[in-house]
Image 1 (tube, one colour):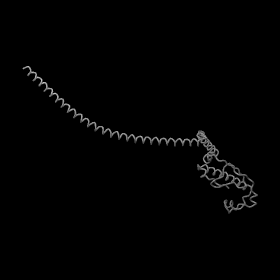
Image 2 (cartoon, helix red, strand yellow):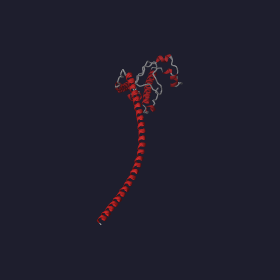
Image 3 (tube, helix red, strand yellow):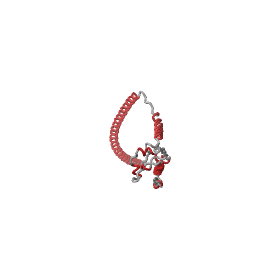
Length: 235
């Protein structure tokens, strides 16, 4: 009683399907050995001829048939088939199987230890980069409040002094502007007087010139008179 293999599964290139096919082949080989040994021991009469192998496998097993089978243990290094769901029965020994390293590399996640070490290193680097900035802070002086009050008083005093100086400057500028306006008016008055005096002077100069001309005429007449008188005396 031989059960055919499944070549379609063996032709697949999927490693999981190949492992499942190998597990199934191993189980079928063990089952063929078990069936062959049972037939040799004369237990083939327990299978009715009118029933199929599948019905006989799925049907109940009698105590006589169970006792007639020799005890066998199945050991395999192949993993359990994820497709057919085959697993060893409780009476059989558990299968010892290993997963290839290629599949482990594809399916295994990143170890938590490496992640934890990476996180710890990152946190340590951040702390080391932040710690110098914290250490550069200077402690505040104890008399900061007193200094601030004194500074505020000085600022108020300076502000008051600046305000007073500005007021003084404004008052002084206003006084100077008033003086300038008065001086300008006085200058204008004096300028008018100077113009009048210049006009009077010019008039006096004209009169003086006229008088000088009159004096010259009179002197000329006096000279003529003296000459005439001298001529008369000579005659």
